[in-house]
Amino acid sequence: MSTGARFRLSDLRLPVVGAPMAGGPSTPALAAAVTGAGGLGFLAAGYRPVDRLAADVEEVRGRTDGPFGVNLFVPDPAAGHPGADLRRAVEDYRRALAPEAERLGAELPAVDPADDDAWAEKLELVERLRVPVVSFTFGLPPQEVLSRLAAAGCTTAVTVASVPEAVDSARAGADLLVVQGPEAGGHRGTHRVDAVPGEEPLPALLGAVRAAVDVPLVAAGGIASARDAAALLDAGAAAVQVGTLLLRTPEAGTSAPYREALASGRYSGTAVTRAFSGRCARGLRNGFLERYTHMAPAAYPQVNQLTKPLRAAAARAGDPEAIALWAGTGSAAAREAPAAEVVRELVAGRSAR
Ligand SMILES: Cc1cc2nc3c(=O)[nH]c(=O)nc-3n(C[C@H](O)[C@H](O)[C@H](O)COP(=O)(O)O)c2cc1C
Image 1 (cartoon, rainbow, N blue to C red):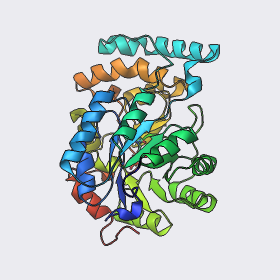
Image 2 (cartoon, helix red, strand yellow):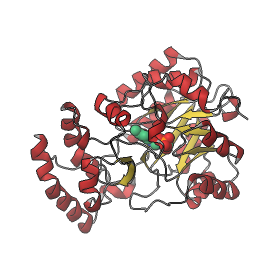
Image 3 (tube, protein in one colour):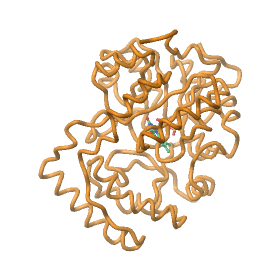
Image 4 (cartoon, rainbow, N blue to C red):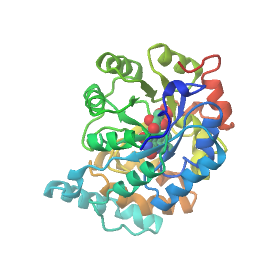
């Protein structure tokens, strides 16, 4: 049962959320640094084994007394039973990836469409540990999950990429919505794998969502400056969420080739692709993205499973051309500076409302 008040965005000293970033960049040190600066730091549960996630939560609590969040990937119950067309599309993609696997000296694995990233165990963990904020992406969890977490004292947040997703999530009882625009680095949080995410820029999407629902909104996607942040806060966001801007901070777990790619400025911007995971995500336009975007099927988690050994081999070799270099449209603004400095500068002169 709940002890004490649940977290509210107005509890923050600064209206900044450090985006959860699965796959390495999110670390307890980064979450604690964002929280320590007055914002809301996040851990990413996606792809993370449950025992490691539990240790991460403990480490954040050892580093800060302030609020923090854990983000979970919501599995699609239908994903475990792909139709014949989707199964064929995955096998076609496997064949297309074979030369890449050979080049990298990696094996393409069997896929398991029913893999739900230990959903039930992770939910049980965040509830038991009474994580202050539990956010979700890739879907809207069942209403009873949101109410169970609220009863345990957790504040819940759901990522939305469209007005209908926002309306459904508010109706289901989400305490906060993370409104994610097309500029965002990493995966779009569309509630369906095969959804074609909208192109409406974040300020317009935020305005449309604000007109449709009455819950506090966190604006995310391509926020690269204090001016961007101020415009969104003035337009009614209760806080802004940044991911890409934190990738080069020393506290982030971003790999060396990924950092180098961001710093180099040698890529011609970012693009949205299903090539790495089967879900739409924005990243720097490296060789893999350019070669495979046009043929990748909307199959998650299968495509993610297929490319995992390729990405791992490329990372081991320090080769940025076949790793997922997730980044938003503001990637050029990411700089090597302490996370607390990045957070403070983003909202210099403002406080949370
Ligand atoms: C490397 C990386 C990993 C990400 N992983 C997650 C994740 O695990 N869960 C999630 O909800 N969002 C994830 N995102 C998206 C962020 O929550 C957020 O929407 C995005 O970073 C905002 O856009 P920006 O990167 O331009 O600031 C990720 C983003 C990046 C750049």
